[in-house]
Amino acid sequence: MPHTPTFTARPLILASGSVIRAELLRNAGLSPDVRPARIDEVAIRASLEEEGATPRDVADTLAEMKARKASEKSPDALVLGCDQILHCDGRIFSKPGNPEEAREHLRALRARTHHLLSAAVACQDGKPLWRHVGQVRLTMRDFTDAYLDDYVARNWDSIRETVGCYKLEEEGVRLFSRIEGDYFSVLGLPLIELLTWLGIRGDIAT
Image (tube, rainbow, N blue to C red; front, top):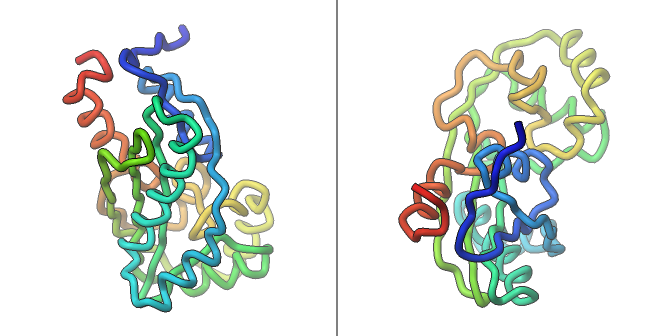
Protein backbone atom coordinates (compact mmCIF):
# COMPACT_ATOMS: atom_id res chain seq x y z
CA MET A 1 0.00 0.00 0.00
CA PRO A 2 1.25 3.55 -0.69
CA HIS A 3 2.58 5.57 2.23
CA THR A 4 0.37 8.31 3.62
CA PRO A 5 2.39 11.54 3.98
CA THR A 6 2.66 12.66 7.59
CA PHE A 7 4.44 15.98 7.09
CA THR A 8 1.97 18.26 8.82
CA ALA A 9 3.40 21.76 9.14
CA ARG A 10 4.65 23.16 5.83
CA PRO A 11 5.88 22.03 2.42
CA LEU A 12 9.14 20.08 2.40
CA ILE A 13 11.46 20.78 -0.52
CA LEU A 14 14.39 18.50 -1.31
CA ALA A 15 17.06 20.61 -3.01
CA SER A 16 18.66 17.52 -4.53
CA GLY A 17 18.09 15.48 -7.65
CA SER A 18 19.12 12.28 -5.86
CA VAL A 19 16.58 9.55 -6.53
CA ILE A 20 17.59 7.58 -3.44
CA ARG A 21 17.25 10.59 -1.09
CA ALA A 22 13.73 11.27 -2.36
CA GLU A 23 12.90 7.58 -2.01
CA LEU A 24 14.18 7.46 1.57
CA LEU A 25 11.98 10.41 2.52
CA ARG A 26 8.92 8.96 0.82
CA ASN A 27 9.48 5.56 2.41
CA ALA A 28 9.54 7.33 5.78
CA GLY A 29 6.07 8.72 5.10
CA LEU A 30 7.06 12.19 3.90
CA SER A 31 6.14 13.83 0.61
CA PRO A 32 9.08 15.94 -0.59
CA ASP A 33 8.85 18.32 -3.51
CA VAL A 34 12.07 17.64 -5.45
CA ARG A 35 13.67 20.86 -6.70
CA PRO A 36 17.43 20.43 -7.29
CA ALA A 37 19.47 23.55 -6.52
CA ARG A 38 22.10 24.29 -9.15
CA ILE A 39 25.43 25.51 -7.80
CA ASP A 40 28.95 25.24 -9.20
CA GLU A 41 30.03 22.44 -6.89
CA VAL A 42 33.39 21.88 -8.59
CA ALA A 43 34.47 25.51 -8.30
CA ILE A 44 33.16 25.90 -4.74
CA ARG A 45 34.83 22.69 -3.59
CA ALA A 46 38.14 23.72 -5.18
CA SER A 47 37.98 27.11 -3.49
CA LEU A 48 37.23 25.56 -0.10
CA GLU A 49 40.07 23.09 -0.46
CA GLU A 50 42.48 25.90 -1.34
CA GLU A 51 41.42 27.67 1.85
CA GLY A 52 42.24 24.54 3.84
CA ALA A 53 38.67 23.54 4.67
CA THR A 54 38.23 20.08 6.15
CA PRO A 55 36.19 17.46 4.24
CA ARG A 56 33.46 17.87 6.88
CA ASP A 57 33.35 21.63 6.30
CA VAL A 58 33.22 21.12 2.53
CA ALA A 59 30.24 18.76 2.79
CA ASP A 60 28.41 21.03 5.26
CA THR A 61 29.03 24.19 3.21
CA LEU A 62 27.83 22.65 -0.05
CA ALA A 63 24.69 21.29 1.62
CA GLU A 64 23.95 24.70 3.11
CA MET A 65 24.48 26.55 -0.16
CA LYS A 66 22.02 24.24 -1.93
CA ALA A 67 19.45 24.65 0.82
CA ARG A 68 19.83 28.44 0.90
CA LYS A 69 19.49 28.79 -2.87
CA ALA A 70 16.29 26.75 -3.01
CA SER A 71 14.95 28.44 0.13
CA GLU A 72 15.27 31.90 -1.41
CA LYS A 73 12.80 30.84 -4.09
CA SER A 74 10.35 29.27 -1.61
CA PRO A 75 10.76 31.19 1.67
CA ASP A 76 7.77 29.63 3.46
CA ALA A 77 8.84 26.05 2.84
CA LEU A 78 11.31 23.93 4.77
CA VAL A 79 14.17 23.19 2.38
CA LEU A 80 16.63 20.32 2.75
CA GLY A 81 20.05 20.58 1.12
CA CYS A 82 22.43 17.62 1.03
CA ASP A 83 25.96 16.78 0.01
CA GLN A 84 28.26 13.81 0.26
CA ILE A 85 32.06 13.84 0.46
CA LEU A 86 34.39 10.84 0.31
CA HIS A 87 37.94 11.26 1.53
CA CYS A 88 40.84 8.88 1.95
CA ASP A 89 44.31 9.78 3.25
CA GLY A 90 43.87 13.48 2.51
CA ARG A 91 42.32 13.08 -0.94
CA ILE A 92 38.75 14.10 -1.66
CA PHE A 93 37.10 11.98 -4.34
CA SER A 94 34.57 13.37 -6.81
CA LYS A 95 32.13 11.57 -9.07
CA PRO A 96 33.94 9.70 -11.87
CA GLY A 97 33.89 11.33 -15.29
CA ASN A 98 34.25 8.09 -17.23
CA PRO A 99 34.74 4.34 -16.66
CA GLU A 100 38.54 4.61 -16.62
CA GLU A 101 38.38 7.24 -13.88
CA ALA A 102 36.00 4.98 -11.96
CA ARG A 103 38.55 2.17 -12.17
CA GLU A 104 41.29 4.52 -10.96
CA HIS A 105 39.19 5.61 -7.99
CA LEU A 106 38.46 2.01 -7.02
CA ARG A 107 42.11 1.02 -7.33
CA ALA A 108 43.00 3.91 -5.00
CA LEU A 109 40.38 2.80 -2.44
CA ARG A 110 41.02 -0.94 -2.70
CA ALA A 111 42.17 -2.65 0.51
CA ARG A 112 41.98 0.67 2.36
CA THR A 113 39.61 2.42 4.76
CA HIS A 114 37.91 5.63 3.64
CA HIS A 115 35.43 8.02 5.22
CA LEU A 116 32.09 9.01 3.74
CA LEU A 117 30.50 12.21 5.03
CA SER A 118 26.79 12.80 4.48
CA ALA A 119 25.76 16.38 5.22
CA ALA A 120 22.21 17.74 5.46
CA VAL A 121 21.10 21.30 6.18
CA ALA A 122 17.50 22.48 6.60
CA CYS A 123 16.68 26.11 5.78
CA GLN A 124 13.63 28.30 5.98
CA ASP A 125 13.44 31.90 4.77
CA GLY A 126 17.01 31.47 3.53
CA LYS A 127 18.35 30.75 7.03
CA PRO A 128 19.74 27.45 8.34
CA LEU A 129 17.65 25.91 11.14
CA TRP A 130 19.30 22.50 11.46
CA ARG A 131 22.39 20.70 10.21
CA HIS A 132 24.00 17.32 10.65
CA VAL A 133 26.98 15.52 9.14
CA GLY A 134 26.92 11.75 9.38
CA GLN A 135 30.25 9.94 9.08
CA VAL A 136 30.82 6.34 8.04
CA ARG A 137 34.08 4.32 7.88
CA LEU A 138 34.19 1.85 5.02
CA THR A 139 36.93 -0.67 4.29
CA MET A 140 37.19 -2.13 0.81
CA ARG A 141 38.41 -5.68 0.34
CA ASP A 142 41.40 -6.52 -1.84
CA PHE A 143 39.40 -7.46 -4.95
CA THR A 144 41.12 -8.55 -8.15
CA ASP A 145 41.70 -6.38 -11.21
CA ALA A 146 39.48 -8.73 -13.18
CA TYR A 147 36.57 -8.24 -10.77
CA LEU A 148 37.16 -4.48 -10.76
CA ASP A 149 36.98 -4.29 -14.58
CA ASP A 150 33.88 -6.47 -14.72
CA TYR A 151 32.22 -4.54 -11.90
CA VAL A 152 32.69 -1.16 -13.61
CA ALA A 153 31.54 -2.56 -16.97
CA ARG A 154 28.36 -4.01 -15.44
CA ASN A 155 27.51 -1.06 -13.23
CA TRP A 156 28.77 2.08 -14.99
CA ASP A 157 25.34 3.50 -15.74
CA SER A 158 24.41 3.18 -12.06
CA ILE A 159 27.67 4.33 -10.41
CA ARG A 160 28.54 7.24 -12.69
CA GLU A 161 26.72 9.68 -10.39
CA THR A 162 28.19 8.37 -7.13
CA VAL A 163 31.30 9.34 -5.20
CA GLY A 164 33.40 6.23 -4.61
CA CYS A 165 31.84 4.47 -7.61
CA TYR A 166 29.53 2.24 -5.59
CA LYS A 167 25.98 1.91 -4.34
CA LEU A 168 25.76 -0.10 -1.16
CA GLU A 169 22.18 -1.08 -1.97
CA GLU A 170 23.38 -2.72 -5.18
CA GLU A 171 26.41 -4.82 -6.22
CA GLY A 172 28.69 -2.25 -4.62
CA VAL A 173 28.20 -4.00 -1.28
CA ARG A 174 30.47 -6.78 -2.58
CA LEU A 175 33.42 -4.36 -2.63
CA PHE A 176 33.55 -4.14 1.17
CA SER A 177 34.95 -6.15 4.05
CA ARG A 178 33.81 -3.81 6.85
CA ILE A 179 31.38 -0.91 7.30
CA GLU A 180 31.13 1.14 10.50
CA GLY A 181 28.35 3.68 10.73
CA ASP A 182 24.83 4.54 9.68
CA TYR A 183 23.47 2.83 6.56
CA PHE A 184 21.28 5.79 5.59
CA SER A 185 24.30 8.11 5.66
CA VAL A 186 26.00 5.84 3.13
CA LEU A 187 22.96 6.28 0.90
CA GLY A 188 23.32 10.06 1.18
CA LEU A 189 20.99 11.22 3.95
CA PRO A 190 21.29 11.13 7.78
CA LEU A 191 17.65 10.12 7.91
CA ILE A 192 17.28 9.14 11.58
CA GLU A 193 18.68 12.46 12.80
CA LEU A 194 16.47 14.39 10.37
CA LEU A 195 13.31 12.57 11.43
CA THR A 196 14.17 13.09 15.09
CA TRP A 197 14.49 16.84 14.54
CA LEU A 198 11.26 17.04 12.51
CA GLY A 199 9.47 15.19 15.29
CA ILE A 200 10.78 17.54 17.98
CA ARG A 201 9.60 20.53 15.93
CA GLY A 202 6.16 18.99 15.50
CA ASP A 203 6.49 18.84 11.71
CA ILE A 204 5.75 15.12 11.64
CA ALA A 205 3.49 12.94 13.76
CA THR A 206 5.24 11.25 16.67
